[in-house]
Length: 177
Image (tube, rainbow, N blue to C red; front, side, top):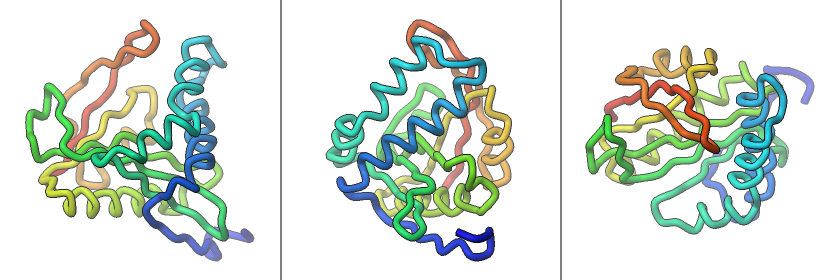
């Protein structure tokens, strides 16, 4: 991979054969994003639980969940995780889908992977009869907080998320499809 212009990117639906790479990339991006002050027990437990190969395979087996991968020459660079027919107290729509994760390996930010993965996820949500796509973003992630409005998403509230008995503020974004 010699430069930004030579990146031969492909996007596709993930298969079970991708689960190991999704889990490892997910753990890497999760820790890069949330472990800004180092690794705490709560983050370590969450990372191991959320990104084990078994957890990813279990999610892939669900009819309402899909993964989209971005890769080049067999190397995984990013992924999106989409869940159909999800609800949130601030959404209340049976035709809503949730973008549960949009992860790009740090080295490959700035290549347009994020917006391409998001556009693919939006098309998938439409195919699953969703009229809206929503996502929550940790308020400590300024790049993601700026990304979603540039893609046409509106900030509609600030829910909190409890992780290992710790409360974290998020921003909730949505887009009508």
